[in-house]
Image (cartoon, rainbow, N blue to C red; front, top):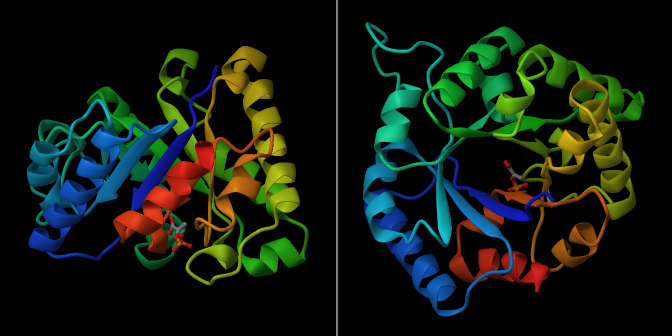
Length: 252
Ligand code: PEP
């Protein structure tokens, strides 16, 4: 059956020393009191190798927040999936709405990134979700389905087993405005039905679908209680160990 996951996305926060301190603090907390779910932290590239050394990977998984859409070569400033893997990271977050919006990451580019990540042994946390205008026009299902079809529905069933989906309504990211648990459950169930249509019911039942968007300790229990919500992708509340732990504890 699918895993329950709480994953942090630090975004462009924390210098190296601050990042190591946060990872160390979280590692101390979670090795002393084992979580009831898989925990992952997504850090900037420069933190990966050092953070990898200070965490117990049997308790905390490590994710990059991006990787290049080329395997190697003359792409100044880029970081390849192979390089990410070599740091000790197990995951990469791809398709985040901030990358789609501010860095013009198209479905085609994301498809390349997904393929390279999987080819290099990384698991992918693939983000999808609609804007406020799309939600108001009741287009959330069409948007999510198109984002899946554009970048991850070409995979084989075997490759699919390394994909985690994060449903993140753009209007809820960093805004303090959370989708209600009913709204989130409704679209998570829809996303799972799309996965079932494409890869079969068993694969769909084994797919972890995370909710992201102003998730915190106070709303996580209600969200995670829903049948198709398998955890969260957490931005702001992953930047303090106590806040992140409160969300992890929603699985207790
Ligand atoms: C995110 O960006 O992945 C996110 C969910 O952010 P926040 O929790 O801050 O809304």
